[in-house]
Image (cartoon, rainbow over all chains, first blue to last red; front, side, top):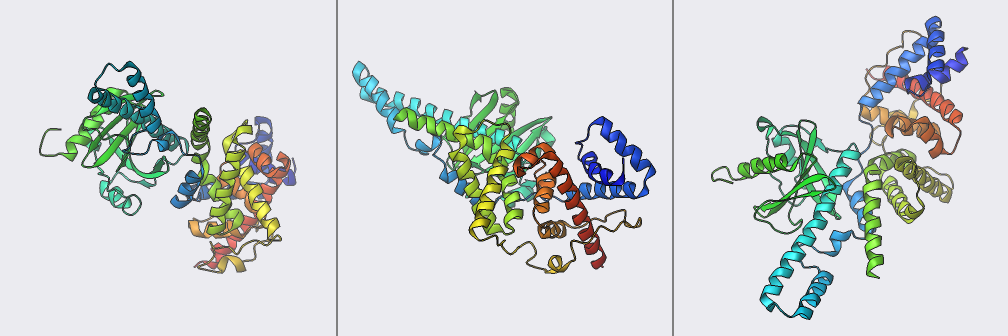
Length: 263
Length: 186
């Protein structure tokens, strides 16, 4: 191998793109050529420095919402927050009217329950999607710190709620940081925790699904999802932890929100 | 009708899950190709609109290079429309240092310049932004978008051999500019 060939191939070596045979040839050449050895070292350092410099840009939030807004509304969008889904209500009423067994009042309460469940299922799906996206994209945190006093002010001006940020490290749930996320085109706060290797996204928004005084737990695509409302906020916790452990997390958050009384 | 609308919404959800995780990657490449933030915004948005329109025909293999290929086409179309005039770069707004550096000299090979000292991110951004195309693109696709050589070839529409020689050239240019910048900072 001559220096001209080596100059090209040493980059492939640095980038891990070279097969073993060629890698060996480059190494043999570099062992006897000071010029190429120096280049290999310099480019390797350059690559490490660049990798550590955080050069990847973060897309502005307004760009993300513009793109979200240009897409057809997702299933949850049609069922507007805190309103009832018209098509499903009509079809339910149709069914009950045909039977005409139940009184209107009983029918209405049943319909309400059915519609609420339907809507929460949709929102649960959206929340799980957001959770999966956060893990895929290498973009779990916008603000990365275990200090709750750093995470909380970070959300100021980014979302229209002040999400409670509670450090549960002592109780086995490590606070990793916070992230701005979009569910159904709306900005929501996500506070990110970790238990062992499992990530928990705690989504907090003013209106996200049905208001629930008690915690409801479901499983969507194998992820545990807990939803409840407290202090005028909707909370959705998502994780691949099993449901019992996620409920334990929720209890600790609730307890911290109400330090005086029982949760 | 309702079925169609539902299908459309499900498709939109699939698209969101598949494509939106790469928005930062798309925006990063757009930032370096267009060389300013406002144009990068527009290019990234146009890229996602086109991707959405062609999502039906998307068969893989990987979402990230597919999106970056579209983005690259969007940027090239925009340059063609403007008559090949690139926008002024705004990474270098605060300081004009990066623009006046002699970028294209051959790399210095004196053995004492072996170690590159830590440069701050802003300086590196300016140096990369000042590289001419297609070397700028090669650096961004490799170092920031983290693509394999094969994916880079796909995005740039050139053989892998060309990717390798461009990347070698790009890194040599960057290293030369880097050394000059080192020398000029006290």
